[in-house]
Figure (cartoon, rainbow, N blue to C red):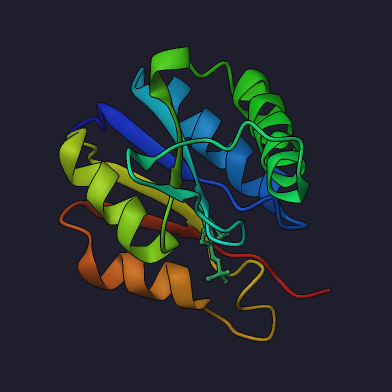
Length: 147
Ligand code: AMP
């Protein structure tokens, strides 16, 4: 197996997220790989305007939710030492957007948690399962045990 050059960590802010992030960070250090991080906004309504997708500027609940998501994302990305250009927050379905970004950015390893918010009772959550199925590169699912 050759050295990984570009690792993508998918974060969902679930309880065990730090464990997953730490593994991705260690792998990036080990392989001296570029480390990118993605969070997919799947629980905030996407603002829809005639000009396409924009971040809402009104002080409404959507805005506040988005700001909170951005703050959480920044904290994790800062802890990982991810470069600004390698931080991705996108709207959509996590399983699709993670795979899409990985292809576009020539990622060779995706790191996900075995389960997160959507798969608490499962051995392998739905996002991890789908990413494993559809990604064109290696996928590492960090085994998270239920408490
Ligand atoms: P789940 O399918 O919710 O059990 O999540 C399994 C793993 O998929 C999580 O540990 C994350 O690594 C990733 N994941 C889930 N939801 C998202 C999301 N909205 N954005 C980025 N990654 C996610």
